[in-house]
Amino acid sequence: MPCLEVFVMDTTQKTPSPRSAPNTGARRAAWRILQREGRRLEETPLRTLLENPGRPAQLRLEAAGLIADFSKQRIDDAVIDALIGVANSARLPEARQYMLSGGIANPTEGRQVLHTALRGLEGDPNAAQLARAERQRIVDLARRFRQGELRGHSGQPLTTLVCIGIGGSDLGPRLVCDALAQPGGPDVRFVANVDPADLARNLVGLDPATTAFLVVSKTFTTRETLANAEAALHWLIHAGIPREAALRQFIGVTAHPEAAERYGVPATQILRFWDWVGGRYSLWSAAGVSIAIACGPEVFEQLLDGARAMDEHFQSAPFKSNLPVWLGLISIWNRDILDCTSQAIIPYSERLRLLPNYLQQLIMESNGKSARVNGSHLGLLSSPVIWGVSGTNAQHSFFQQLHQGPDTVPVDFIIARKADPATLGGPDDQRHQILVANCLAQSAALALGKPLPDEASGEDWHKAFPGNRPSTLILLPAIDARSVGALLAAYEHATFVASVILGINAFDQFGVEYGKVMAKSVESALAGGDASALDPSTRALLGYFRG
Ligand code: F6P
Image 1 (cartoon, rainbow, N blue to C red):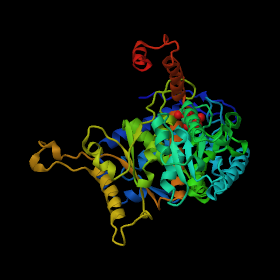
Image 2: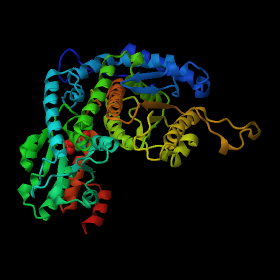
Image 3: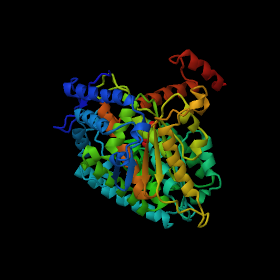
Image 4: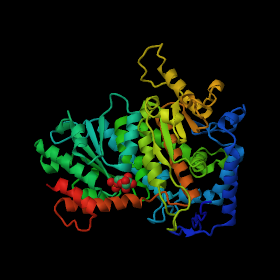
């Protein structure tokens, strides 16, 4: 039985005031009921649950144009009720309201959490107003870029944008541009890795006279991003552009505009966001200006609208019909009750091929933790390992293990109802049907399995498919801006829901910060500095590089 201490937000005042709740009887009781449900369903395989013809309708939710079918999860109505009981005992309704209305929902860093304000939710009037004004600047800049009004040193319009940023300053915009950019728009590329190969590869074929660089960094201190920006600047200077003029081909996006200005980015080309936007939630902010440039400002606006529709649903729908709440509840069920250590994300959509990468950061950086908000040790299992690639490719790599391997890996299948408009195969093009058929077939095969043929009587395990492997299917009307916005917002809220139930702060990332500090001291040792504080293994390895 995991330790059940929870954090409780102090909703009476807007101060960083999490306090450790005693292991309340209500919370213990709610978890006990959930565990009992787990034991009850142990004996009931999905094959049996799916004999109920009413099940799909009972376990399907719709929100903001999305449909989520949970009928192939190892749940039933009683499990959902028990999960909602756990959520209520963790004070999820209060925590949700507290976050959306601008409470200090990130208490370890003393910050509000208001990415929803960027999408037009009015929970905090001040944040909503700042977001509106900056959105106008984003749209204006994108329009000017797309119309060729931004010019480089030679007077030629800047036509290519190389975006430099890492983590949340990269993954979201990269995903959305990859999903939604149509041919004919500006050439927008992304560089994240400090490995020189990343920038070099992306600069191939580009003309310094027509290339702009977008440096996205919330802190404007991230080592990798600044090193890549410096290399990009050098590339322009090396092409004969004076330093100051080269910097005029830079656009900055940051929560610290003074740092970008100090770096030399012209003030008129600095867009900003705020501390109340977490790095991994920043694609909705000016960090998403690359989306507005690559796909058009109207697409960026639709993306925000789709996300807002999901926000409104999350804010007001009862838990019984709240899609992101269910997504979060089921992640807890699979991890803490069914003991699944990982979770696969398989978009049957090439446009969404970067979704697993994006969700890795969102979910694992948010909930991959072992501390409660109050700093004590977490007694529950937190985030599963998130991984995946697009289907059907995934079927030909690791699906063998999903079907017959020793571990149960819950899968989220994501697919669009409408075929991609890029269909070139003529009126007889069957590829979308093939895609859909494969997606549905995989989820059915995982759920149902295939019993051993009688005559083999358990002898030939090659042909045994155990089944009972859960999945959710999320159906989008199409891969368009609104649906993608709603989908990403649903996962954001689901991640928050899981964090509240676990009692952790989803919005800090001390593990990453520690890695950054270590990298600094190793970097200095590599450059010849004192290495005595490092462990013998790392010191020995340094020897290979120092020479
Ligand atoms: O990976 C850790 C992290 O702090 C992320 O949360 C953030 O998105 C990324 O680093 C980049 O940080 P910045 O935007 O400040 O450069």
